[in-house]
Length: 367
Image (cartoon, rainbow, N blue to C red; front, side, top):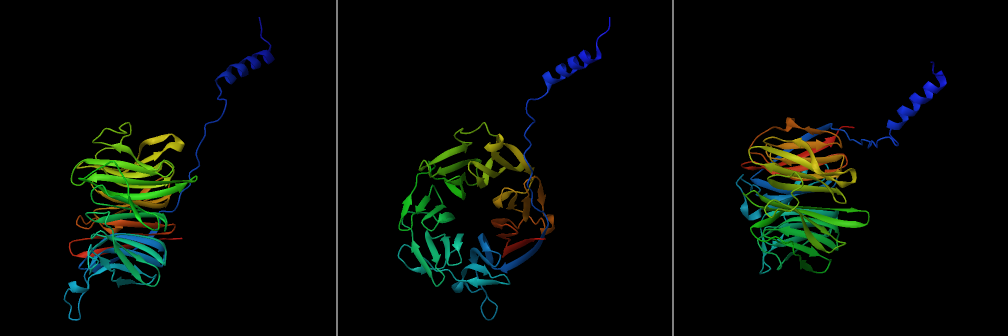
């Protein structure tokens, strides 16, 4: 017998429609930035630089331990400086006053820097003190709640600043006084990195705790909505091990609520950048780039699609939201680690040191 062509077509259509997806798959749009940068490297003799913060392209602070030369070319330790400032044209030495527990002005290494504006700059010192610039003068005070040196600093406003340092120190400044916070980790752990993000009305501060020279580290988060620090991942205490992080965690850059880029390393194996991005179903399972033997020290960005990582061997790499580019034109000198990093939408500043010199790297996107 014969089948009506019309009925045959209907049968085929019905059969195909059963397997057709009800809704098309969601494809996330890729938003990227350019990898094209030009670079300028400046060296400071008798110096080591630890941190940098860029307020804008012509107002940048880099801090550390800087010993200038006297009039006949000898190192002048008595006039050591704590910072250099970039005005858009040149770097200039700046003496940062710091005080000890007896309120005596001393010269010591400046460890961290953060700024809200040109007239609101904060610095932390190895002597448990802070220095503040109000646009007219520097003021320094000893923080009795701290011990062992302050290193990292991050703030949402002049009345909401977080300080971290040796041991388990995390302090909060509310504009009037310091409060010591409970991180859940004690010495020999140290807070080696700290950064925050404000998203959807929630403020979060993320930190990396690490036992130096050992494979023990942890990821911490402080959510202002809960008012306490929580441990997200710890290889020593077996927390969050459903995520693929291995070895030592070094730096974290949160770019949205509960979302971050993370630098980790397993000695002699690999140094990877991971991403935790719950909004797309990625729970720390994406290894974006393997840096091989280039140990990462700091991750920062102005957005997810404009993030950088720096580390030893003059490591400088850029993530544009889709791919990474390593700028090997800066060199691969093993004795020249970059440790501090600050990122603006179209420029980046990094600092570090080699055996005798401080290193200042300035990158400008080629438009």
